[in-house]
Amino acid sequence: MARLIFVNRFFFPDHSATSQILSDLAYHLAGTGRNVHIVTSTQIYDDAKAALPVSEIINGVHVHRVISTGFGRDTLFGRFIDYVSFYGSMWQCLVALVQQGDIVVAKTDPPLTSIIAMAAVRRKRARLVNWLQDIYPETAIQLGVPLMRGPLAAILTALRNRSLRHAEATVVVGDLMARKIESLGVRPSRVRVITNWCNDQEIRPIAQSENPLRQTWGLAGQFVLGYSGNLGRAHEFETVLAAAKRLRHEPYVFLMIGGGKRFMELSRSVKEQGLTGSFRFVPYQEQKTLSYSLAVADAHWLSLNPKLEGLIVPSKFYGIAAAGKPIIVIGDKIGEIARLIQQYGCGIVIAPGEVEALVDALRLLSNAPETASEMGRRARTMLDANFTRQQALARWSALFDQLDQSPNVRMAVAQ
Image 1 (spheres, rainbow, N blue to C red):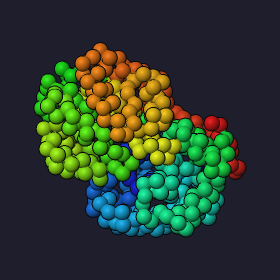
Image 2 (cartoon, helix red, strand yellow):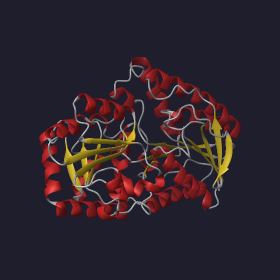
Image 3 (cartoon, rainbow, N blue to C red):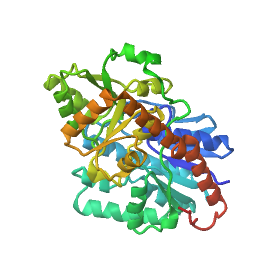
Image 4 (cartoon, one colour):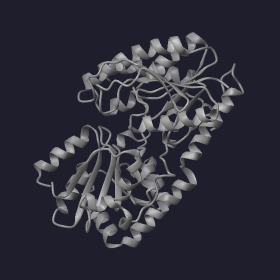
């Protein structure tokens, strides 16, 4: 079996979504007897000054942590410097670590890691697999990132496309992303859709009467709309904020669990508009309490800028479904998650800015608890049928088994 080398800026004990998913996969593969290595940073997602050990073995996985600058996520310029420094350290580590025949799996934090990884695998006659959580530089262009304009964007796009075509396989997390990659000239036979996942064996539906957080967080007697995870540049909160203003004198609470740039922006807007009584803000929860924190809400919302459909898939969707809660999607009505919501009848889809529709949805769910419960049951049924962690890990194992069978040629991965 080929050695597997994953590249991502964060790994356990970091709690961010990409780190948790990579940690799950790495431990699973090591448990099957594979030789697994991780090239990552010494940092934690929300602590750029963290200094994790530069080398250790965790659950059979060899972790190689490289040094990079620690400006953090507060400014785009600081983040850019952190990216560049990580690229340089990552390159040095890969050149020293990669051997002929290895499979290097490049994730997308930082963006465009595949370009550096491609150079390393070509130098060492190894093989490349791309694992795209999002598609850059298109995502940055749509978000209006100043550095991603003109000639620079064109150069990065060309290099990125070259890395996609060079790869043995490109794994994406949604069907619309697969179509986008294929439109860039990648053979469909080399594109594999393997969705993200959550710990669905531990995250289970929990009755409100059995959830101590309901009382601890002062939510008894309220209808709670929850949000769990990162609230960043790809997400909007204005629709929810406007709905909260409409409902400020009614028994609705908007529970925000997590962090991110727009998380703090929302907190400031809530204070400015005098809506502190309608919102609760709590930090990220430990993995062991995640089932309870997800279950404390009566329904959850997630959002995605419609311009980013086909470029990003919100991974928080899987945790909400595992908890058996109705899902309110604020985004493109024909987007990746919206289609699943409509197909399985497990929530409500609302376009950004449709405040009245969101108010009506919340009143519907709060006044018809049987409808909300049925939507939650359908969400869990959908997850069990299509999106469990066991299913996703099995698909990854199958991919590497196929690559092992053709070590000297590019593998045509069946879609």
